[in-house]
Image 1 (cartoon, rainbow, N blue to C red):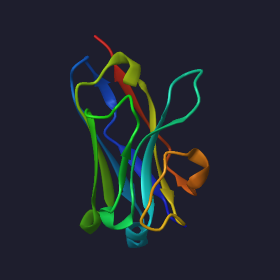
Image 2 (image 1 turned 90 degrees about the horizontal axis):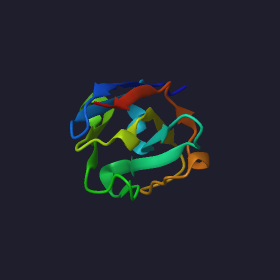
Image 3 (image 1 turned 180 degrees about the vertical axis):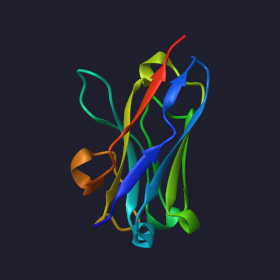
Image 4 (image 1 turned 90 degrees about the vertical axis):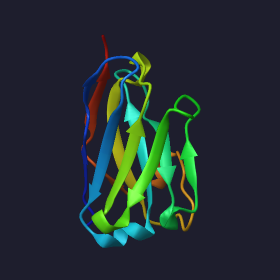
Amino acid sequence: QLQLVESGGGLVQPGGSLRLSCAASESTYDYYAIAWFRQAPGKEREGVSCISSSDRMTYYGGSVQGRFTISRDNAKNTVYLQMNNLKPEDTAVYYCAAGTHMYYQCSGAVHEYDYWGQGTQVTVSS
């Protein structure tokens, strides 16, 4: 069963940067859509960004467009989320997820994803 492990979260000041990593346990992840979601206290989980298999498609939520960049390194079975110009409203637990049935597409919808990591905390505060 595919396992996903997030890392790279932490405390950063507004305007700062972080890079999150999502490491997969199997190379078959290359064929899956990978997404980043986040969930702040008292709020629903929301799609932040995703990347399809073969990198044919990427998606960014409106609030992170132009600040976050998603990429994947298949040699390392890892997907990254580079987060720049962070704002206090970016504070949340960030989760990566894999969707196994979205061929060459990806989605920001929670129900499209089959495997989830345990999450990593990102806190943006001065």
